[in-house]
Image 1: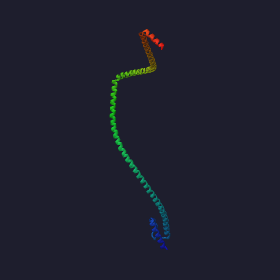
Image 2: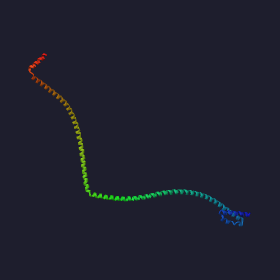
Image 3: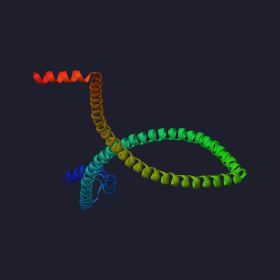
Length: 248
C-alpha cells in the first residue's frame, strides 16, 4: 500500500514537473524517502492544489491565447487595411508630388518669363519716363505758344458760332425767300396761263379781223371795178341796155 502511494506521488510529481511545477515538487517530494504518510499526503495535496492552480492558469492562458490570436488576426486585418490605405495615400502622394514637380517647373518657367517681362517692362517704363520728360520740357518751352494757340482756338470757335448763327439766319431768310419765289412763280405761271389764253383768243379775233378786212378789200375792189366800168360805158348804151332789159 505504501509502495502504491509512493508510486502515485511519484507520478503526480512527474505530471507537475511536466506542467512547470518541478521547482515546487522538488521542494516537497523526496521520491519515496518521506518519513511519514502525512507528509506524503500533504505533499500530494500541495501538488494537487498547485495542479489546480496551473490548470486554471492554463485555461486562462488558453483563453488569453485565443484572445491574443483573435487580436492578432484583427491586428493583421488592421495592418492589411492600414497598408492598403498607406499604399493609396502613397499613390495619391506620388500624384501630388508629380503635380507639385510639374507646378514647380511651370513656376520656374513663369518666373523666368516674369523676369524677362520685368526687364522689358523696366525698359518700357524708362522709355515712357523719357517721353514724359520730353513732353514736359516741350510743354514748358511752348507754354506761351499753347496759350496763344488756345486763344486763337477760342476766337475761332466764337467766330464759328457767330457764322453758324448767321448761316441759320440766312437759311431762315432763304426759306422765306424760297417761299416768296414759289408764290411768285405760281403767280407767274397763272399769268402765263392767262396770257396764253388771251393770245389764243387774240389769234382767233385777229383771224376774224383779217377775214373782215379781206372781205372789205374785196368789196372795195368790186365797187371800184363797177365804178370804173360805169365810167367807161356811155350813157346811151346804158339806156339801151336798160330798155332792152325792160322789154325782156
